[in-house]
Length: 458
Ligand code: ADP
Image (tube, rainbow, N blue to C red; front, side):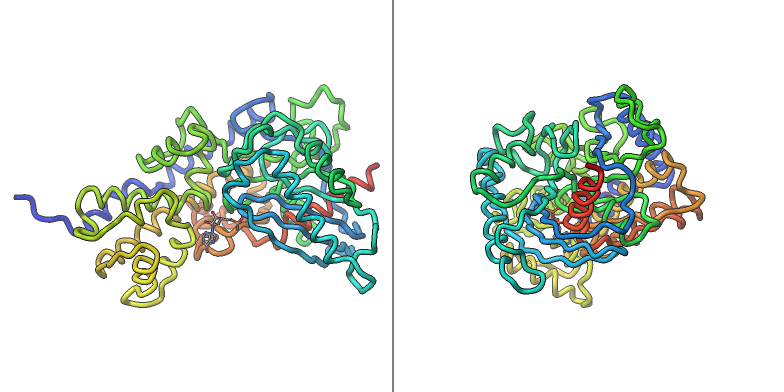
């Protein structure tokens, strides 16, 4: 008879599945760097490296009132940003939650909803007090639309494909700036759409406005993506446009797509394969599916379900609640990792309250360790992406700052530390020259600064 495995025995199996060695990381960085270069050289590559038409860094002297609308993965945010120059700004904002139905509803309806929220926001912020909008004051609007779009100009963007669980029909392949302008007209709003921006580009610009050592921006939210500033001569695919050779342009990498379809470079477990197969876009966003907030809780849950099927966990208890796909929010992983009690009371709470399940201490220790494995792998893979850009741009010697935003970065304990450890595993001690920092309000403020930069260029 085989002796019954303990939770610690099970953990060893998952440790070997989810752990990335420094050597493996360096191989990923190498492949990643090649993909970035391929995306710059030819159109329609797996990592599309999208030119954003944002030329160079802000001067820090940008001033004025701007509206920003941010369609993220989870929320819709409307902001009024007052740029005061000298890297300073003020921001007023309101969040509106998007329902799962809205994400799958007709595209024009989604933009109508955005316009409706903007209308409500304008109405409630109009008056004659300080920091308020004047009635019918025409305002420039930066639209932060964080899905991959090809852009021919700053106020244009053809949606390549939805990501992050969105699937609104009649939108892919169309100019979303144009669709949104239609909604603005419908509601007769006193705004002028001046720029369509990705949240990573916004974060890059806003982060540099406040701290000029910033050279890269990364978002760790529902999705995962990065942007950086590239020399125009190093973007061969736009050579025919004849842009001045001393110019620089921000590139929206859309790096969440790295290793999509081919699945050659990234270590995928069978849980990752299930996440992919059961997603609304199988094969796509391979890198993002290992990293971002939308998926980490689900990866964890799939391991739990495997152990339920094997008769290891929750014998004799009704497990239907935890068997529902995507019921295990990534925020639970954060909570489990930060439980300060010996008894792991927080974990007791999560399992009894949300899933009606009783747990033993050994199981709770296992859950915490498993959360750590999933979270740590995500952070180390992110370090590989950052390292690829650092390599590509030769930023290691002088070092640089990486502006980062999103709930996963801001709220997951030790996520940033693990990214930094990963960078040291890749580059050795010099990896310490690359440091991430939280970029506050990147997408809203960035949108405003870019709208201001655009106005100045016209
Ligand atoms: P978005 O990317 O949609 O603009 P966020 O940056 O807030 O918005 O990211 C939302 C994602 O972050 C969700 O997938 C959610 O599961 C995850 N998340 C929310 N809170 C936490 C937390 N405390 N720890 C880890 N992940 C979290």
